[in-house]
Image 1: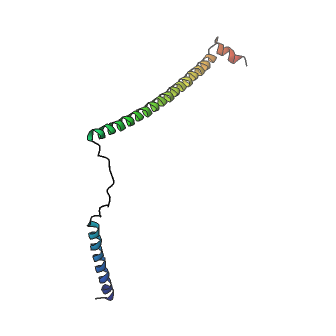
Image 2 (image 1 turned 30 degrees about the vertical axis):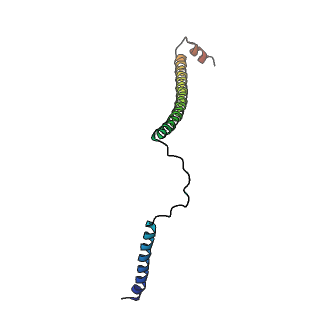
Image 3 (image 1 turned 180 degrees about the vertical axis):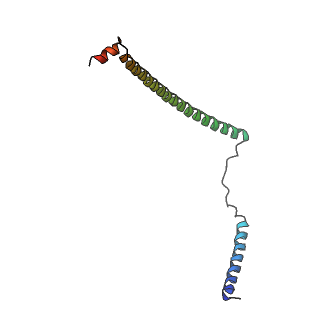
Length: 116
């Protein structure tokens, strides 16, 4: 056997024994506290359900309020966008009407186009 093997065997044995000691120490229960703190009686199932339903109601109410505000904000922006598109379309149609009117004799646009 090589000399490095003789050096590693004690290290492996020490590591193995240490791991056994650590796992045994981890399995032993912790000592009980000297004085147990006074605790309130545990809430009943009915009390737990009431508290949970209150929290759920408040969360739902808060979420519904946020959703309502977001919907109103979105509807307002949509209304503005539709109005803007409508105005641009109407302006375009008027512009097209003026250009057509310039070519038709006897219209106000035709007379206005001739003057300058």
